[in-house]
Length: 129
Image (cartoon, rainbow, N blue to C red; front, side, top):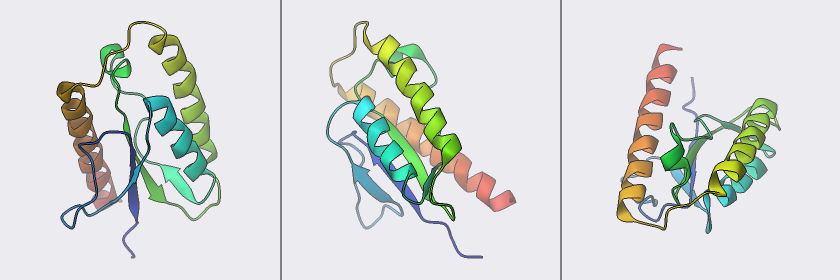
């Protein structure tokens, strides 16, 4: 069985490709909404959403960074992923009207840790399937 190709779509400057990074990184300038937009675009071109588009709580949702994991797909469109992104976009619009945090190292670190957990969970799921 061939190993699936994963990509990270992020606006977090602490997440970048290096020789030690086993995944591709699609860096997107802007807000978490821009990350959702770029991810949705990729989901329409042979990728599928592997991580949750919403962070686990509202304070992090108001933070300035978001990183999502997508994987190579056999189908052209990820309909379920696109629907999840659209629902996340609606929720972000509601929550981000309230006081959003300015970029800070803490938010970048939290986003990076959530990304690491998502990648770990995906790895575990792939190993048992």
